[in-house]
Image (cartoon, rainbow, N blue to C red; front, side, top):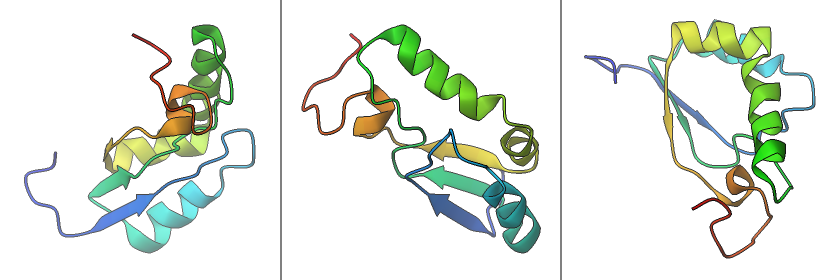
Length: 94
């Protein structure tokens, strides 16, 4: 975490397969020191580790998101889609 946080941004429900131009807007208009994921950083909608790896890779390979992570610290919590199954009521990976 940054030594001093003066601007905080947060978000959720990121559909990694859609255009990710919102990262440019957040960085330009808000310039947050810390971005906090409040769940659903990706929508895996799957039940295998390979599928979840692909979902996360789709987000992290996006140039706009990668650029954003260079200018803001990223923290957060995991939610159902981050584990794969919507409202699956169980942890997919143990």
